[in-house]
Image (cartoon, rainbow, N blue to C red):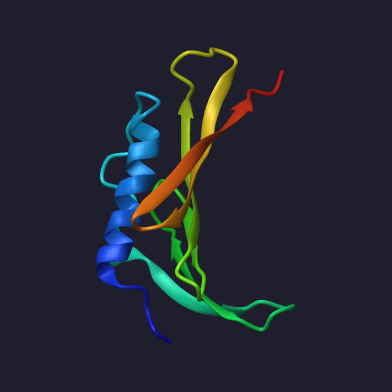
Length: 113
């Protein structure tokens, strides 16, 4: 299994933290690239093999799928109150794209009533 380049991984981790910081929140130094575990997963339709990075064991859980064409999709838990909406919290952030142009969005959830 060929692991993603460390520079790519570090850039992805920085992009995840940046998505959280755009909301005025912080998750410290998480995710840490060196703490990811890796596995391969074959797409059932195309049979292309992607590398899945997983972070678990700390306060938060996250995954990143590195596709054979160089794209990535990552989701990392935030689990903090939304800074502007008292009835909501930031469940996670998502980051996708390529290292030269990551995009991302938060996943916002409402508290159960």
